[in-house]
Length: 179
Image 1: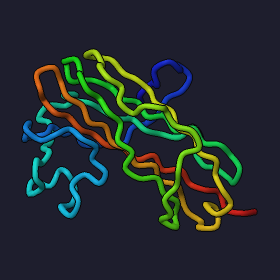
Image 2 (image 1 turned 180 degrees about the horizontal axis):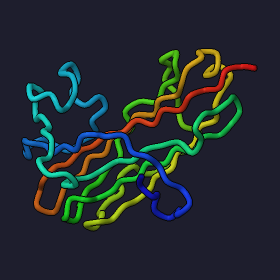
Image 3 (image 1 turned 90 degrees about the horizontal axis):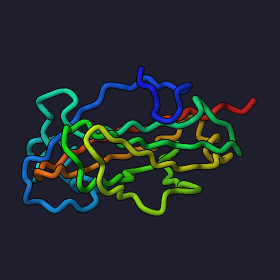
């Protein structure tokens, strides 16, 4: 269990996820949405500028992304937290949250009701962390698809020594069925 910074009463259980380091440091660090069109997942070694798994646990940047409710019904407001955690041992000079997709079970593209004005969080000290919060009001249309909301995000960052880091995490929120 990981205790959420700033809220000692709230804990979450993290799903295992991969940590990645960019191999080709000559590539630009622009937004990765989609990561590499037509090449598959960014950890695919055949992708240009492929990411590879960090060899040491805790050697990188982590994204912990979750909703404030275990399930939701129409007209309820969900608050999605995206925690960017620097466990690289170095200051991150450029950490940016990348909004990959936000969909309901009907695969419709959704839009957050409110979002931070900037997704670049700038420098993050070694061992530091920062939170970005997004909200969404669940609609009856979301419920009509009888499934879940999937908020997919990634974080990319650069250390002071130029190492490019990446991680991703999806927040999945079931929608309650009509009574």
